[in-house]
Amino acid sequence: MTPVTILLILFVLALVLFATEWLPVDVTALLLLGALLLFGLLKPKEAFAGFGSDTVLTLASLFVLTRVLLRAGVIEWIGSTLARRARNATAMLRGMLGAVAGVSAFTSNTATTAVFLPVMAGLSRKAGLPASRVLMPLAFSSILGGTMTLVGTTTNLVVSGALPATGLKPLGFFELAWVGLPTALIGLLYLFFIAPRLLPARDAHLEETLRAYLADLTVAPGSPLVGQTLRETNLGRDHGLTVIAVRRGDGTTYGPPADFRLQEGDTLAVEGPTERILAGTGQLGVFSRSEQKLQEEEGTARPGDVRLVEVVVMPGSELLGHTLKEARFRERYGCSVLALHRRSRTLERLARLRIQVGDVLLVQGSTERTQNLGEHLAVLGDLTERRTDLKKAPLALLFFLGALALGALGVVPLAVAAVVAVALSLATRMITPEEAYGSIEWPVIVLVACMLAFGTAFEDTGAARVLTGSISHLLAPLGPLGLLAALFVVTVALTQPMSNQAAALVMLPLAIGTAKTLGYDPRPFVIGITMAASNSFITPLEPSCMLVYGPGRYSFLDFVKVGTGLTVVTFLVSMLIIPVIWPFHS
Image (cartoon, rainbow, N blue to C red; front, side, top):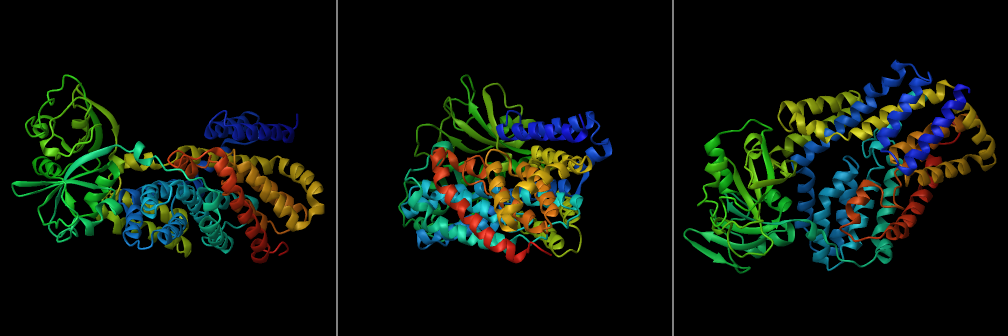
């Protein structure tokens, strides 16, 4: 067999594996790379060049910088700030969707959806709307926002990184905004006024998946809570926290009324999900006395060595029947208990609760201490990454926005700016090396690097000329607009079962080769492929959609019903704008 025949067979096999996901996409990509080497279609230097490319370095760096923003609580702060300013709940929900699209233009779609999910669920309750009416629009808004900038989604970066090998310039930082911004605006109008008529009315079960903890939090000097009544603090509406009791001096008020006015030094017994309690310590000016005492006793721990874990109390534990103070938990284990979860709801303060079998404790301590809690305290999971520190937010924003600004203005290449920002984040201990490596989506990195190598083989063997020649002969009668529409539709179809990046990398050489063969400027077709690859609206297989699939109690057909209309909207807007901004004939 000729090299062209071998490569086309490999191409079809990879396409089938990508679509069926019989193997993980990164494994398929590695197998493809291995086959290219074994059959001599690529030299090792060419095959492995993708792993050191600017695209891969930029992707890895942006994954880390997004985690830095999350650890500093920046995105969560944006959501909670907007929620606190809500007056008209319905209008606020729409404003929040716009904010999601804006944030997603510069950060990961998935991360944006995850952070805004509890905020949107709370706002839907306030507006008296079923959460199913807002959670799918949340995911779709994050996807729409990703089409506006080069860093809005990994697909954009992947396409841009693959262009130099084809002789084309990489995408400009805001180049996609010409079509991405109008698409996002019209898409949001669709989500505001049409999608609610198509979405089912089902209550979310988000709270069922979040463990409700009881914690004692003390109001610190200078806290925004000082002098406010419980009604004015909006702890329930804006922060998802229920005040069970308030201790002041030697007295405790259980079930305090809404007009109870808080003072400095009050200790609030609050109940809420882990994320809400942890976020409250960073945003509300409150602290855990147990954690404070541990820090005073242990001194400043080595950065990255403090862990936050969930542990369940097993039969035989020496804690049973005692309060945490009576059991001398901090002295015994060298850790602090920030909160406690018990299946049966309690109106008691954490400090007075006597430990029972099955209680789940939120424990903070050094890595060594949390790993040696004994056989009667079983660790359920590590929640360290859920803790945020708003004190680091300004520096996190400076590094992130500084890298984007330097890259967008062309002062230095985006890859250089992003790598330097990561180095600064590590040097200033904004994130630990372990967290940084863990934040990188390695399957995406492997997929991109391998597919960049495949693109090189596709060109070098002449397979691109053979395949695009056949496609050109078939599609030539359609004209340039018809060709753009056909490539858009095929990419949309591929990106439903396949990853967005794989669909874009598969279609890109075909689109460029066909355009060149027919005498058209490839640029508009590149833009069309990029836009189409992000149109994962019709199925819930996109990561952002999977996040809301369960909590919104959606069915597969719900996405087909709502997503098809949004796909048509993006298709029409793209067909109208792309030929105007990027003419078919240069």
